[in-house]
Structure formats: C-alpha cells, structure tokens
Length: 133
Image (tube, rainbow, N blue to C red; front, side, top):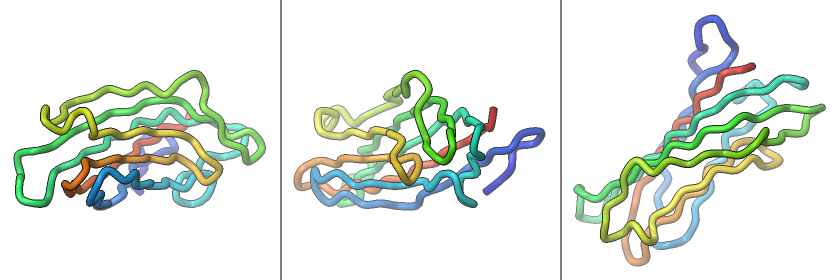
C-alpha cells in the first residue's frame, strides 16, 4: 500500500483474475483492517480502475472501467454514501454485450465482480485508490 501524502489512504492492486467463460469472478479488497484502513467513524472516497484483455489468442481485445464512490465505516459496518458511478472507458465492440464489471460494498470490503465472454478467456486486473475523508 502506498500512502497518499497528507491523507490516510493508498492504492490496492488485485492481480490477474481470469474468466475462461461468461462466469462472474469476484475480487475482494478487504476493508476495515490493515489492507484497507477505513477507521470506525471515518469515510473514504474511492476509485476503482478495472481493466481486461483477451488472453486466448487475440491481444487486440480489451476493456476498461472506472468506478467511484464514498464509503463510510459506522461501528464496523461499511455503507455506500449515495451511489457508485461507473464509466466505461472502452470495450471491444464484438464482446461489449457480454463484458462487464461492477463494484459493490459487502461485509468484507470493496467487491469487484467481472464477467467475461462465453468461450473466450479474459484476464482482469483492478486497482482501488482510497482517500480518507
């Protein structure tokens, strides 16, 4: 974790998850502990950058998504303030109807779910950036 100068926060990276089909895959960024220090009574602004690339023979197919939101920790329970926004940066046109990524806050922390394409293999990476408020 790299601390942001002047604020508590940092960057968290989840390396390569693979979706060999249209089956959803979950990446969890644990919160409220040493991995994502959201202290009780505090909140964080987060951005999640999610990127995908087809890895089964076509290196030109890729996708990118950016999510943003605010999470608060009330007595050990995480909640989203308002809504999480999603911006599609790019999707390979042929696979765009099936490719997807989503972000939610669960009991364990920030949950990134990615979905590939039937009969194709995509590799996924995610980076979550936090800034405590």
